[in-house]
Image 1: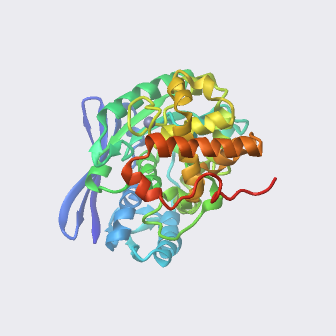
Image 2: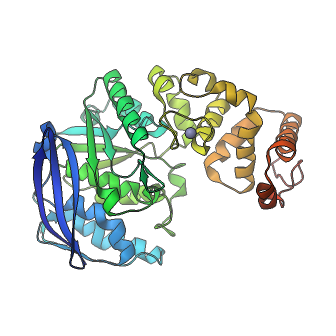
Image 3: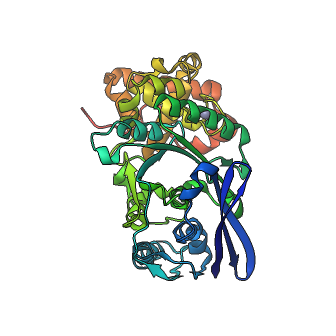
Length: 403
Ligand SMILES: [Zn+2]
């Protein structure tokens, strides 16, 4: 059982910290969320919404009920107990049908009417910013940008300090470009509950949003998956939580808070297509999870460069990617597309199809031949040969529809 004992604010120098004292089967612990002092008035001690959402992935997989005497927003508690938890446990044997037992309140919590979104520097984040900062829907116009440190900077269980600090620098510049205030927050949530951030990021971010519940009227959470068509609840504990984000946000939303899945109607290439002409994006796009600036070589950099190439915009991104390296090693990049297509990986299939559609059939077959040739002669290591030995290249096993 997870028991939230106490929720209170402390301050140190220019930072205000929202603390949650709790215990797991009697063992005491503490998680905190920290912002600049000027935002302390918006930290929410009246409800335990943030805590419940933050610990939920752990509670679900470790079979812990959650209890507290601190009230929770009634609609949120209802939706978690009657919809999200039963649905997740029914579709994943690693998730338990736990119960949240807390007092609830239907009283509306006053907020400052702010509208926020994250500013990670990635394509999804830029899509959310560009589509909302000057929105024709005035009540939904962006008022604040945020950078939450709730787990995304923890690669291989190690906090990536250099990447985090560079992201702060970049976020400050982007916020200045859009003339919006930037809220930088920090938390130990990911240290206390060590977990795969990809599988839990919707929960961790909602924890950050709900800690400042008295600030937000609405919050755009940038959708990061291919698009909403891939929705599934199967094995949700092992999947990117974005594959069922519409359900998560439906359950988290209530009369106090509106979390909007921004961009869920588009895949990554469509998003890049709609933001690629922005000078700010061309200057500050950062997708790399390996380095503080784009390395141009990791899978995420490769996927983004290929998508930009497919839509004919890669040359505009010479400030943030090594275009020269890409052009010299084009076949290495194309290899990723061909490999993913063969293995039915959907994240790059649209890019594969786009590149294919821009070529004649004979050009495409020639490209495939050259990609395979280059890899088999120059680049494939012995182990990779073993893994892919069953793949028949040179056009035999690649199925493509007749146009
Ligand atoms: Zn990279």
